[in-house]
Image 1: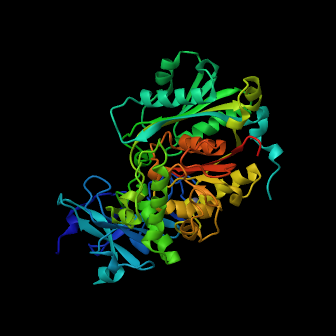
Image 2: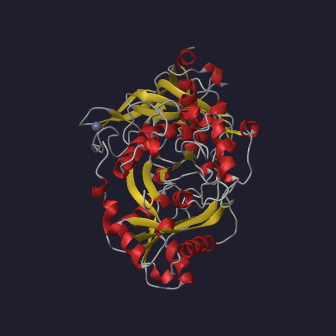
Image 3: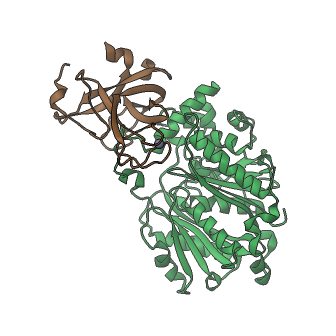
Length: 142
Length: 389
Ligand SMILES: [Zn+2]
């Protein structure tokens, strides 16, 4: 179970990187120079709240996770190569920033709307990189 | 509350009328060239209107997956008359936006006889959202089935409703489609069958999702002036009373984005037409996934907020009910070939208002709305009525 993730690369480096604990993820946002709100992903060409250009905006890392708003089981592979069944949910990862994420639990009974999720690094089959999955915060703290 | 209908831009050129409709049945992907599909619809519309191709001054072609210059390649088989040809792409709403462009051209007096059509083959679904240079946390983040499965789950949770309440949308619409000779699905489905069909995402089963397909639909629009000059039968001409389009705003509450979009576009169109939602006899809407019909019947206002499932349950949305929703069979039953879908809605409303929807006629149909949304998200609403309404 213990795999050294620090030697692996993030599958999507524009979105996240490994946190200091070597297991959970930090998400990369951009902070708007005009309205100071966070946008995701950090390389979006405009603030998602006010439309201000973000080319020169500061990138900020925040612990990846948020509030689970809704979730469903995907019963069939909706894109090539995705495992089925799997669970997808909408997660509020910052104020007024909602993103769909993959939730790594065995079934929906472990979930309820409003619960806090943490983003963790998941080693990919290739062996040299990790992806992002959300797990209940208590489990992440285990 | 309602605006003065005399100030409606659609009253220009003595009004905009649908004078002819034609379809090629929607069907599963085949080897049939798109030109065959499209020409069947255009010839059907010409024959229906009693007009000749030479009289058509301009054409708008809604399509998503055929490629560049689909119109001219097809139209040359009708005779090279030199007409203006414009291709329109706006995802699911491509045909609806082609129709809106044709309305504008007629209302502004640029042309008096204009073709608005949609034709499509099933394509690879290439999307701009996959070319924006941005990565996403989930591979399914831009897939509508996931978005609507999440909305369905919230809808059922908030209303304490069971899965069968949205499955009944599919039962109604498959039944309507079984009576529509242009529909892709022609078999009624029982509630048990809809619920027992394989699950796709969340509580949505495959029979609650629109199929992949191809087809064509065409409408011929004429000005009120041309209607008289050409001696067309006003009883078979249906008047366009409102056309309104907009796109999504920031969500104020999670999951409300598409609902706010449908509400705002539908209400602006109703106001321009000078009627209330409950005066609609017909409503064709984007039921790509069953739950959408419940959400949007509330958003358009044919029923009260929270009453979508009850409205369906009471039979108010069936043919013969208070407002026949998706009398054509909708996207779930008639099919959703993208380019033609919005034009097919207009054709259905025209047929119903004329009283020519044999086998599925809604009694005393006078007012109808065609509502469509597209990826992205864009919305468009058209209100039509009998010429003398
Ligand atoms: Zn801003």
